[in-house]
Image (cartoon, rainbow, N blue to C red):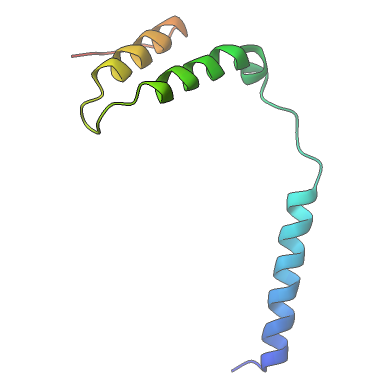
Length: 78
């Protein structure tokens, strides 16, 4: 069984490493999201301003299918 100080040192090193990784220079945003940010925020706001009950998301499903179709994704409904 490790000594309590060794365990504490391990935890401190782990937290230090995680903090350093979190503070590292972030990579640039995905070009798709940069190009479509306004539309994505609009979709987010629309969906969250008109919530539906779980497993009864009729309008949400229609909107998502429409948006995926606009993005040229193959969509199967029904």
